[in-house]
Length: 378
Ligand SMILES: Cc1cc2nc3c(=O)[nH]c(=O)nc-3n(C[C@H](O)[C@H](O)[C@H](O)COP(=O)(O)OP(=O)(O)OC[C@H]3O[C@@H](n4cnc5c(N)ncnc54)[C@H](O)[C@@H]3O)c2cc1C
Image 1 (cartoon, rainbow, N blue to C red):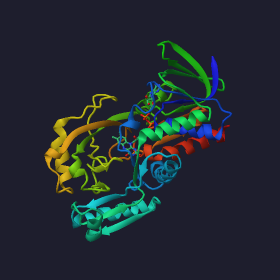
Image 2: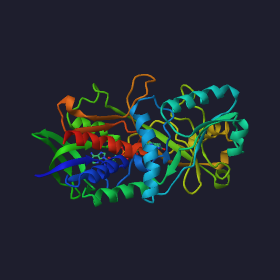
Image 3: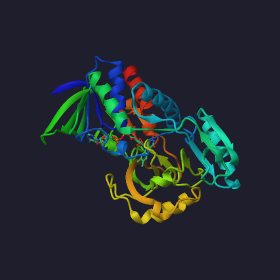
Image 4: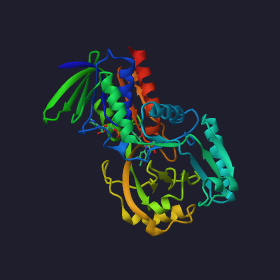
């Protein structure tokens, strides 16, 4: 059996970023990425809003807050240096009337506590200067929020990983993990449909929607240890191009208590198209990407509260993604799990579970965090 230094499960944006960072730091380490699909980023990493979040909403000190704020800056810099299409578009969180001004002020305080740069509270006139067509009694403006071409980002990370010596093994679906002396034996089904195995000293679980299954294969009690994933769909509706042009920033409703996700918001793609979403919808399974056209009315009503120009005919079902949400109790907000499992007696195993938003924004900071764990264990 071939024995390598590092095996990474999953070639989404997180697995690719981790592979690129380990390859950059350690050309001497033999690294392989095992990916069940025929190419990278076929799951959540290509089914999201492509927003480079600023890090406003997350609890201060959480991994989500720290890695998002750091990741946003790293990403703007990386994209500029590596010719990855991106734009520092800016975002407005709007108060639709005076009663909501206190909510955006609290978001400003939370963002400031998280160290988010470039936050400004705007009064009604200043908000109207940035976005003359929306309903806003005031807004929180976030200058560092942007958008990125996630496909080109992943293509660049893949090239950096392979240039640093990492191997990308597509059509390799991991089916088993056995702890052995000084590492792990990883079983997979290869492109020819046959089962085979490799040995590795480090095993890094970046399996996204299936990270809990990989953790279970490693012997972790996912229910008892809080690693179980709930698959939660997010659907999008596209906005007709003529109306898309009426907004130039990303626009979000205020984070009211009890709001599902970030609320129905407006994202923009690099070609100027606007989309509404994602909502929070039930899914028939981790890879159910159907968009229910019956949800149009719900999207229309939510958007009309701050986009007075929107009409039902402007909206059309677009696409959906699935969030790997950690199962939590009540309203508890789950943080990313990124853990070197030494305390469980599994040295060399690094788990990344519940890598929902802002995982795209944070991927470079996550990669540095994981590579530090490997450096400490070498
Ligand atoms: C609707 C939606 C909107 C979002 N919007 C944003 C946003 O605007 N900004 C932001 O920062 N984040 C956003 N996110 C979150 C972001 O998309 C994710 O955090 C990120 O893509 C996760 O990347 P990943 O590599 O962990 O997972 P994935 O992209 O899911 O990759 C995991 C990979 O592991 C592979 N895999 C799984 N099991 C196995 C196995 N047994 N063997 C081999 N390979 C396996 C899969 O095939 C897959 O390719 C959004 C997410 C959703 C769902």
